[in-house]
Image 1: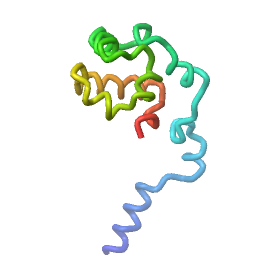
Image 2 (image 1 turned 135 degrees about the vertical axis):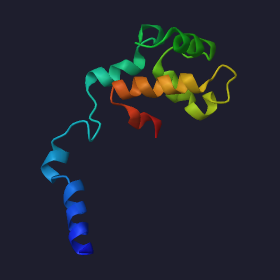
Image 3 (image 1 turned 180 degrees about the horizontal axis):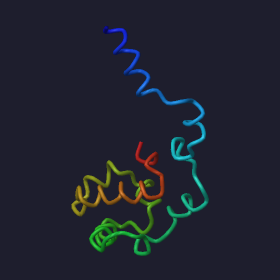
Length: 102
């Protein structure tokens, strides 16, 4: 009985290899749009005014500045907030670039 349940569970969660390799989001493929958004000025990004203001107070003008300085160092800045970080994660998720946080 346990063997049958194990096979059933494995069958439910198994994903065919062809489906994984055919999904561009799985490998976080970058397009020119995804690369270019790092150099866009933060005020032109689809973000809240709070995110834009905190970025300005921290001396950031583009998202590439965020990764040049590093999120760990920015987290020690007095104008850093968890809300700012969550909005950064949301922006990166929109452009399929969450890999930049690792």
